[in-house]
Amino acid sequence: MLYPILNDARAFVDLSGLWKFQLDDGKGFQEEWTAKPLPNPEWIAVPASYNDQKEKMEYRDHYGWAFYQKEVEIPCIMLSQRIVLRFGAVTQEAKVYWNGELVCRHKGGFLPFEVEITDKIAGGKNRICVAVDNKVNHSTLPVGNEAGAAFFGSSLPDIESVRNMEYKPSNLPNFDFFNYAGIHHPVKIYTTPKSYIQDITIVTDVEGTDGVVKYELECVGEETARVMILNPQGDKIGELNGLCGELRIPQAQLWEPGSPFLYTADIQYGQDHYAQKFGIRTVKVEGTKFLLNGKPFYFKGFGKHEDSAFHGRGLDEVLNVKDTSIIHWLHANSFRTSHYPYSEEMMNLCDEEGIVVIDEVPAVGLSVDTYEKDPEGYRKYNAEHHREVIRDLIKRDKNHPCVVMWSIANEPNTEAQPQAAYDYFKPLYDLAHRCDPQNRPVTLVVCQNDYVKDKTAPAMDVICMNRYYGWYLYGGNLELAKKAFAYEMKYWKTVGKPVMLTEYGADTVAGLHSAVPGMFSEEYQIEYYQAMNAVLDDSPFVVGEQLWNFADFATIQGLMRVDGNKKGILTRDRKPKMAAHYCRNRWKSIPDFGYKN
Ligand code: BDP
Image (tube, rainbow, N blue to C red; front, side, top):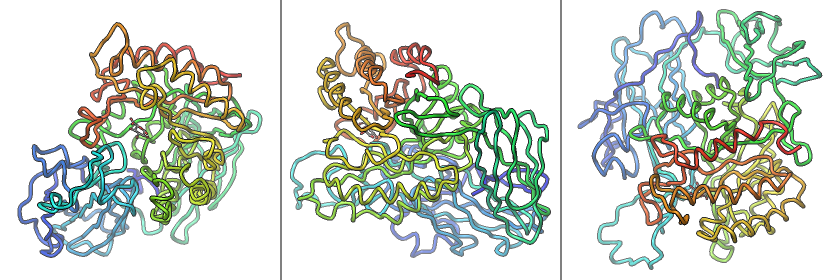
């Protein structure tokens, strides 16, 4: 799906700003709030989560639907064009009403969707109403539990009679980040000519010093297409005609960290015009190496979250610029979009900044219990929705040079029912490969489990694992933690694939110090990373270290979380902890390429 742009053929209006807002009291749909002014609205900012914008517990802990409204007039200069209403992301589910009519519905909180409204525009004011549902359950991704113990809840038996006294349904996320909700990415009304470019696919290859660029257009209309290729300096270096074509570029300037050269395919289709940036680079797994442009690449970085004070999970471009700046300051080169797709704006920025991304779908929390307790296993999850988010993410991000690998899940339980897990995930792995015109590697990130039983992780192109030796296991005993980790790595060596540590970390309270490092202190966080990194350095088949987490982040309340998860090497407001300086020194001496030749 193309990102809205402004040029001589296309215009857009960004509806960011203040919207009227009201939480559902259970009667919103029945009383038709979708078709008339909200009865008792408050002002809320878009894009942003609604949860932290007011000093009210019902905003933070809301369960269910909420309604946004805005009235817009469409400038008459737009009316001769095709007009589209587009949402970057609405979490978790949206129903969109235009002048009271349901015009579209979208399930899934992290990817864009749009609807053409050309024929629906009335003169004067048009009312947009967006109903947003934040419920997470076994049919959604991420996964939530509708009843039962909270993620980090108590293990006391459920006392039915007390529970029934005032039973209020609530979200019990099966994941360790706050279930922020609302209109998280910009809402735009954009125009195209009546005949228009619908989609663009660009695939590149490198042969010697030549770059090879193949493009394919999906267009609506009977026009002819002309494609100009511009080099990173903006000079025209080739011109092609037709809906698909190929161009060879001698002495191509490749995209990679440190030199993120971006070319442009400037496409004219009748009256329509779209400029699509792309990078020339290759990605390949060979033996135990991860090759970027044919050179062994070493991932240095973290798992992140889209998370900040007041905005929650809402797009914050200042924060994105700040984060990419900190990533460069740390001499890191990559991150994983744990545990859901990030904004299109962040992906564009990573292309420009030369930051490598592992792009993850929101499949987190698929953790079946033991087979006896849970004979249904993976069958209880909504595989069709899982397929849909894989297809849609790849369709959205396929042209980004920054994306070098797809992650189809985070920490599913792959060991309790090894065959059932394999049967569930292998077709999704195949699907991701089929959907990606660039055929990037595909992975899934596994948790600390009885790894020898796991059939799924070894079936991936890269083995990505989260490990918490020295924290959840052998916490406080780094010597033992290191031995246990080294012991496990002997097993992974035998699998003969590239291995990457995609999470490891220790909760650390900024400002807490101890001469003899104890858990939660800044000193412990450093010693923890020193111990784990020594094992990584000893393992030639390890192609990367992405620690957990870039910054502290908000979670559900619970006994294990003091004002959120504190495993950041930065605080939530991006102040470095001591470990950030340690990482900076370490990563300065680790090259992007050839670290483990
Ligand atoms: C991992 C999860 C991550 C959590 C982390 C932790 O993948 O989402 O935040 O543990 O406990 O298992 O800090």
